[in-house]
Image (cartoon, rainbow, N blue to C red; front, side, top):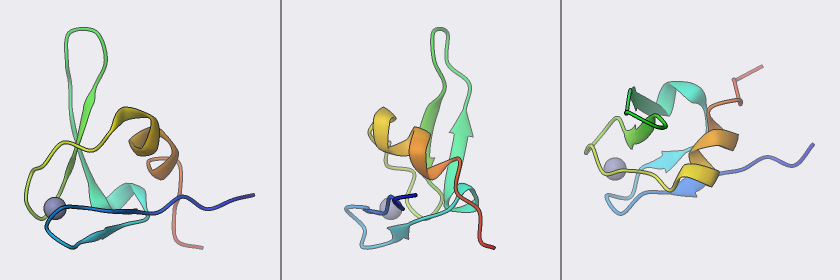
Length: 54
Ligand SMILES: [Zn+2]
């Protein structure tokens, strides 16, 4: 399976669920960088949120 990683504008590398902060929204949850709180694009966040360190 392909691993998705995303580099936030603050420089943090978002690779696992724990790197994201979930904020419940009305329609869909918003995912944010735990370091700086910048929203992460939804499609990327969805993939990253399913990744866990083995
Ligand atoms: Zn960040």
